[in-house]
Length: 149
Image 1: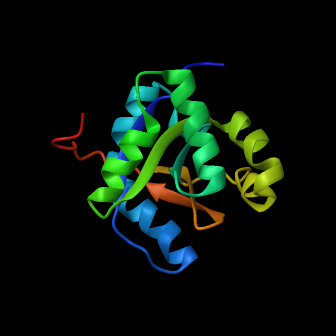
Image 2: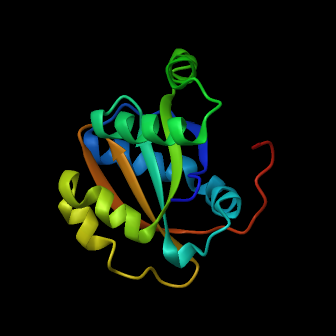
């Protein structure tokens, strides 16, 4: 399995579960082109996972991705992000087939939804937070992101 690109981002909402998941998507849309480019993959064959590391499933995914990628102390990064009042969010690009297998048991509705091809200019994004997940087709904005490494 190829290296899973991992980045950290943050969101500042502590609202109801669905709103919190959608907030993760909204707060991280600007970095979608960057993480997809780093993954080197075709957006039509990729799924961007936004995982709140405080969520049990999100934490498990983030831990596995960080272990595979190496070089990041997940606990320290999450604590630093939370200290700022933000939601510690792992951003992981996963191949479509792997994502379908990954979500088959934990979120079967999401796994089934991944079969739907996103419209041109959009990418599949799964946000995991507050004990659940939501799948959206997010716009890939080609505007360069300034200040994101």
